[in-house]
Length: 498
Image (cartoon, rainbow, N blue to C red; front, side, top):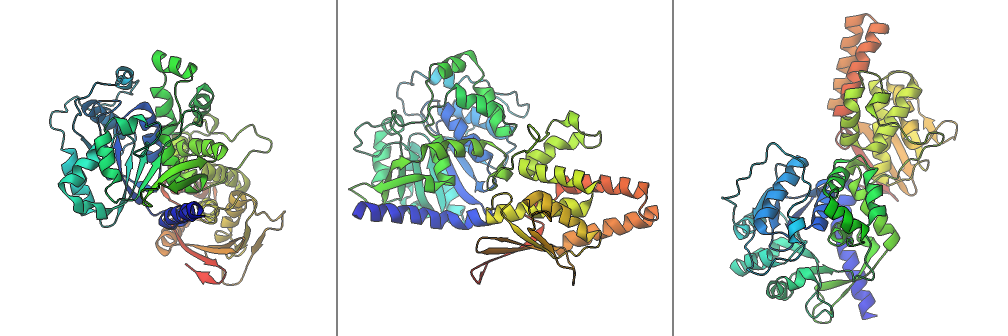
């Protein structure tokens, strides 16, 4: 009973910490990452850097699978690849211990050529200085995510114990002191690990025994190769060497450090319990194997789709994403639009444009609004009820085509109503006991009206030249408008408003 109580409180605490971010889908949680840049660390980092809700002010390299200096160099390449230039990186101290047998291939992966990266690493900032600076200047608490030895965090707290108040919790992929089979991340620097576990910090210790661990095998790798995201591409590129391919075939790799990122995003898939010595230290007891594998793939997929259930095709094998399948003016934008806004919004806008019979600003914004509604309400496709407030007169009513394509709430299914009195650029979306009102922000709406008025004046009405110009504008709006920033959003739950 006591164990279950602590388990409940632990999961509840993490859910309370993360739930505001999950519902808003715009809030960012701050995470300092400590890594030894092993291949599983890089897969985990790809998930983090692919995320749109995790802010990473600092990444620290430790002495583990890779030396801190080589880890620093490789991390620079990874950040440049993801165009994450606001994240500071530093290298921790060396431990003076023998290198692991896997260091040779861990330090010589198939990295892409990045022109902005130089070989100079002679002036690497101090890890301890950087950690103290980052934590002290943080306006709130941060999560310390450790994918390797706990050396750097221990060094920092020994110098300034007061920084502990800036750390909400430590998520550590590794065993706790006294574990029957201590793992690599713990034994690499057990003194530092013991110090941290006795520090009074809230620690979530995640380790999966070999017999329970998920395989990162050829089957999982092949599924990742079919994905078109930047995160998936770097994972497949780094594994595409004779040595790594051989290890894949031999079943060497497991889902190790990636578990921490899946846990950070989906804590409900895991069960933790406190150790006897301290209720502040929680250890992993069990997890949902099937759902964890699904979450793994989704975290490498388009970040904009993270909170969206996937729309499946009915008569198509798949929705087209190859630029060669599109008209000449659209081709240069296809990949940029998908990478920026995700595959689900792409599908919705694609169907909207074909159904609407021309590229239109309001119809595209309607599709973005429908996707945003599914995202906020976490509603499956075809499950929303929509009340449109746009009326039935163009151009405002063009949004209705976007609503239907994006949500599945079609006139044919009787799932959308259109109010004609006092029309405005807004709609109400209902799912379960939640009612969401979305309305285009005034500055965005004024910009749209101004562009349309200018086009009408320039081309003298709704003629071929007018629609050609609107097509050009619509492509720009399609790419530029971020659905998370262009709407006023109000959610009501059982009479409560937020």
